[in-house]
Length: 294
Image (cartoon, rainbow, N blue to C red; front, side, top):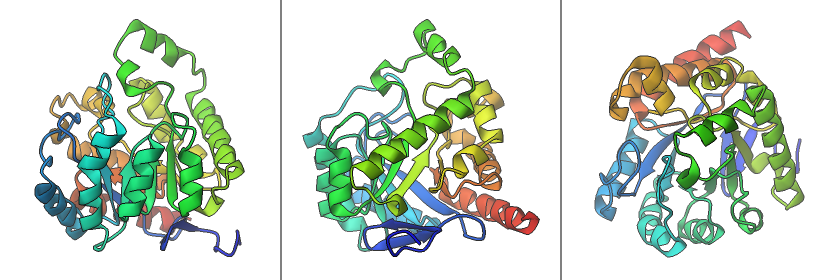
């Protein structure tokens, strides 16, 4: 038991999700309310269309809808807090009565507004390193927290010789990423975030090469053994395009579901995906095989 919450429960305000062996994987559907996301930018900029898309994600089997108001593709321009709030908060307010909603942001001001609008989870791709207030906000509201590994912000994360040099600096990418995540969990706990509220994401698609992605996938159990749920967010990412030769991100859904299923077989408890229906079936089968072999 941890502060009255049974082991294997991820708590996000008034929501609770089982995780670990024997639990059905938690499926987080992606809803980008941005003009420039790498896969679906501009599709849901109107609040009415975005809410309809979010409802469709719940209908397709999403346990959580993850609303993002700033693109994290390499080279993306930054979006200020006011614009992110304008894009996301109405959508969150209209979706949250239907089911759990997370806000994908690195800014504490946006997270606070989103939680006030009904979000129960903050998904921070900087691992709460970009905004010094983020952990304070999460702790104050009892929100769930996903902290992702990345080395640099997206506007600097371009295909370049500098980026390649950073990749080489990892050495053992799995060990390096796991150690970084452990340090971030410790920082969150020190700031008052309950351990049962924390999840981690090793950051597929952020500053790693294809071989490093494959190593992380094959050894995903290293991330799943950190004492908190581990999320895999590989949906439609460029390394899948490199492996399959599929240039159009929207054409990578089947391969993305395969990656998610492998991660679940190796202990992933949360899957973040664009194609919710396809992923729901794939990860449920993977979890059944995982639990049968255990």
